[in-house]
Each structure stands twice: as C-alpha cells, then as structure tokens.
Picture (tube, rainbow over the protein chains, first blue to last red):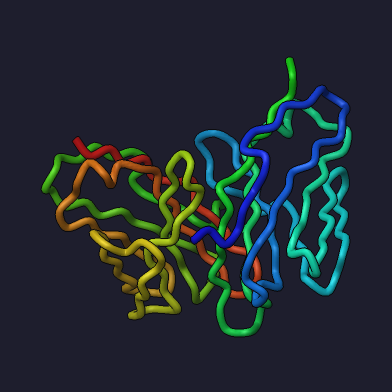
Amino acid sequence: QQQVRQSPQSLTVWEGETAILNCSYENSAFDYFPWYQQFPGEGPALLISILSVSNKKEDGRFTIFFNKREKKLSLHIADSQPGDSATYFCAASALPGTGSNRLTFGKGTKFSLIP
Amino acid sequence: EAAVTQSPRNKVAVTGGKVTLSCNQTNNHNNMYWYRQDTGHGLRLIHYSYGAGSTEKGDIPDGYKASRPSQENFSLILELATPSQTSVYFCASGDEGPQFFGPGTRLTVL
C-alpha cells in the first residue's frame, strides 16, 4: 500500500504566484519529512525538511506546513521562478537517531511555470 | 567533489545478461541505498546496507542482489537482466535524517 501520497500529480502556475504541493501519510511512526527537488537527468536533492515536533519550517521562498493530527503537510513555493520547475518528492521516515532512516517516498509532483 | 557518484551513467544490456551498477560515496556514511525510479512510481527501495559486508532487502528486491565490499562502495547486481528492469537507478547514502543521492544510471534492457 502507498504510505505517502502526493497531490496534485502535476501543477502549473504563473511566475510570481505561490504554489502549494500537498502530501499525506498513514504511518504514525513517521516523524521526519524531507522534501526533495529533482531536475531532469539529475538525482533528487534535499530541499527542506521538518520534524513532527514543528508545524512550520521556512527556508527562503520554501515553507513546509505540517499538521500532525491530520497526517498532512504541504510545501509552499512563494514567488515562483522559472528555476523552480522540477519534480518535488515528499518523503517520510522515523525520527533521525532512532536506528533507521529508511525513507518512504511519494510519487512526486511535477511543477512548472506557465511560459 | 561530488559526494555520491555512480557508474556507468548509461547502460544497454541484453535480456539474460549480467549487469553490475556501481556506487561510491565520500560522505563516510554507514548507510547506503539503491532505488529505482519509474514514471508513476516515484522512488522505490531495492536494497540497502548498514555498513561494509551487510546488505538488506528493501521493498522490491526480487531479481536484484547487492554487495557492500567497503564503506565507500555499494553495487547493485542483476544476474539475469529482464526488460522489466529497464529503469533509472539511484544510489544514496545517509545515516541520520536526509539521504544524499547520486546522479543516476539509466539502464535499458533489450
């Protein structure tokens, strides 16, 4: 079964808009949630991450909002730029330092800007 | 300078042939991982390792073997390649928290 779900599958916005990428999970043991950015022909690269003890994490134009009760999180990309066009993966694992950092990945959201 | 490297970057193999994909990391991580990426499936874990000499099965290990001869190196082995194993393969390393990925190997099995 799919433990990490992402929506939408693809998203297109105008330059300068805020994009919202959604993620939900099923396993209550997940406490660490990294988001990865992947450009065509490259490997995924860590973009931003959050621990379940927080409900918000900001890094420049990228913000994660986290709702533990609903098992949902979202990645907000403010002031979208052409260089943000990529596929974004939500992932989840147990708390770092607890013995395993096996990540479970969602299927990704392909994000692009309207030319 | 890249911390996780993979070779080859592209490979064409024949059905029934043996394929070895190699990964090297300079992060000094104990844990290393092999994933495959297919459209519509995201990243799926094939095998992983906790250190030299150890290998563990991931979520989709059938048809694959792994080898971890040293801290730095982790190989994925397809003893009898099949067309269904055509995919992009990523290696990653990481001990606590994030994993760091290599650039990938595109494998085509004809």
